[in-house]
Image (cartoon, rainbow, N blue to C red; front, side, top):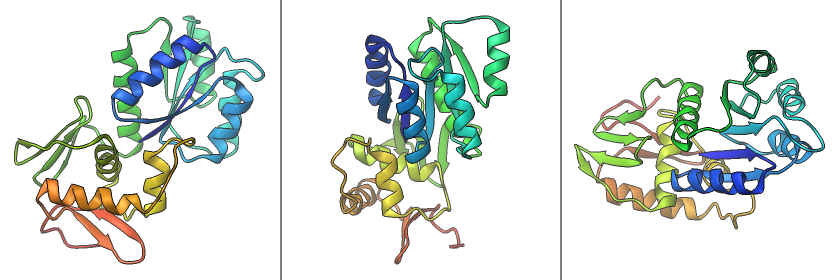
Length: 224
């Protein structure tokens, strides 16, 4: 899952980015509102963490412009302001959740997981597909209760597919959502990750849809 982090404080931005990367997210960063607006309107993010007090263009304006442009990505607003009026203004501008500074990193990650789950129409932190389970809180993947060790990129690939069960996902889409913008992307490596996942999982859960991409479904389910 790919996250846009918009925060002008370099130290805090680095701290959040490190926590997101450790939790298995691909992270793009912006330090001002103009860059944030451009990235949010031009790149396919799964969610955004948006500070309100930004240089060049404030966070509320960025958020309003995203929504006016039809960008529906979940947005978690960060602010040093704790007043209820500011929270109402942020929610009315299109924010999906609100977190006041200072905050615990564990709470930020939990709120972000919840936003992404809700956007995918899921209620539980544990994603299930037949015998396959992925716990978004711990990053633990199991098959029939047995843990499966995955590399970071294998986990990102599986997590994206598990947030879209039954949906055909192209190699290009997977590439755009598991790598940050400045990463040397190669959609051909997706085939390698999928092949490794199939071997490690040991179950027929990732289906190749010829000419279109991949679809995650529980073994035995009929193809749509």
